[in-house]
Length: 357
Image (cartoon, rainbow, N blue to C red; front, top):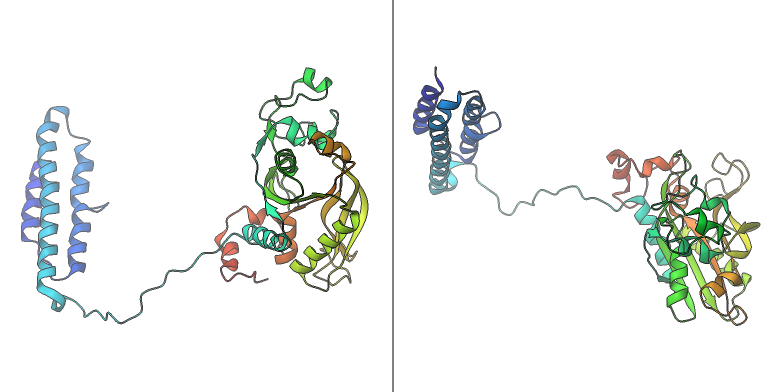
């Protein structure tokens, strides 16, 4: 049967079509215009027609498609005019079907809880660009020109560093990179805000690291900064003790170990008593009873000077934590990569607001 004969036969079939319900109208529509419908198949066959025949056949196929849509509209109108008797009765008082509800991502949930905790003691939220210049990402934070964090193995550079500028102290704005920490936001806040300053800076950061169960090349941080007259290390410890107890419960405690960061002096690593084993020792805390959760310290006077703040009059403290690490302790997720895989089986466990371990 030629293509024209098939068109004619299909026109006759459509003219005889009948439907008593909306479901039968839909069946007819799918049979004619659906992905595997009869009209659709003719259009697929049209691609193989010789060029000299395409004009006539193309017009007939377009007419056929319009006729099919017109017949569908006629059948649909006929079903509507026949009223409820043409199909099953509809109970308008019955509850509607409910769609499954989604949830915030676990990282978003934990980050918001951190923001809420610090918000209760007067910390504002500050944001900054993810592509940063050398001054805000390194220079103003007291990173020497030869600091390892400036090397390619740690940083994703957008514009490669200029050796000539590096020899002269690291050119201030020419070396662009994806920020390696949200401390760059703190520099911008100190440069453009009135004192005192009490703020946290949540956001994504990037480091050129191998992806594993405990590390990723992109992750989230929340960094905090408090600058005022008379700020002490005791204020820092009290603030972080308040934070950990608010998030993990009153039974946890913290300890501080001396450390080194270019932008704080003195500096410390903060450990929390393991919330999983209660300090008795488990594989999460490597049987030590303690889990490292963040770094902190008093803002180095050189950083204050770089941001036009008089270190003889003002002092401050800063701290920073990885949101993924905190989320691991909150939800006991064993592998950081699970947060990035978008596996619905994993994310569905957070629709009720709590992780089901």
